Length: 388
Image (cartoon, rainbow, N blue to C red; front, side, top):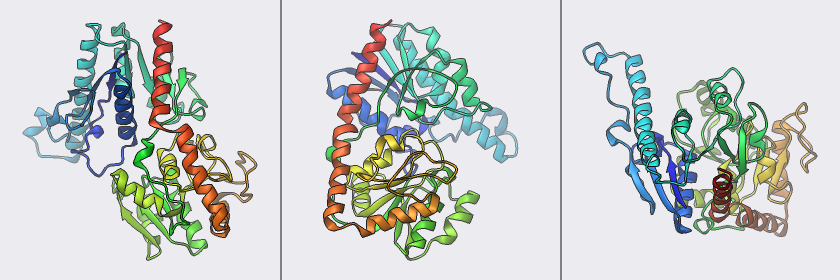
């Protein structure tokens, strides 16, 4: 199959944005390598610094950082709004340049299918006979948002969900398949030891509930290490709800990019804390943790119950008394539920905990590998092409 993977975000460039968490980058590159390994002819339209076994069509590197100002601003006193506007426009031009290259090649019947996650591509679909599939990295949007307008406008385009939970909501778009994310399982070494601390890894956003994890850990007098980038350090949330509560036992560790660093950090944890406040469509860090043998303690929002087996690979918690999503081992809700789950982990016998950690590894091996993911996309592509 001749597959074009169109990933025109500037954040695909690790060289230009080395310290930024951008989970789609890992998934896209794993998918590209997996498809190429199965013998497909894959062309990746993305950043020039990517190392890949696919054919790479690069974007313009001079636009990656967004440092070029619009001509009309060069002769004016510099204002923050001029810089911001120029940076946003540079990112869009970078994306449009790559999108144009992809559809130019598609017009020559170069591809059987185009895979993308970029919203701008919707405007080009009708210009090509090559079928296009989209994946979303967020839940379906609220009705008063730009995202809702766009998805509603193009709801008949072809979408692949990354969890069944992602399909909940409006607008009702055309999902042609569901494919869970997968990781390179052999890149993660599992530890079946008890662990030394509780871990959080991800962005420092209100939706991720880091403050709730800190409260629960402090209630239990436990250690917690936080791995995150510094993108959101200047937000009120981080300044008011996270920084003031860091101390010798609850520490910020910085950002871990390599699989080796993640493996070491997650493998030494008693459990990953994942108290999300939003309807998480997947949550890649959950399967990374489980691949390391580390259980996950999480609010049962979004896709979480599809990934975590309650009592077997971690503990599911109802977000609050008014939002009961299931009957779980942990009976308390919210922060109290997090505290109860932390106690349960600490009180487990060595044998019980070893079994849970082995279950975590097995869960990923059976459901969330690159091979499983590639097979899923391959089937969706074949079904779509056959239906044309």
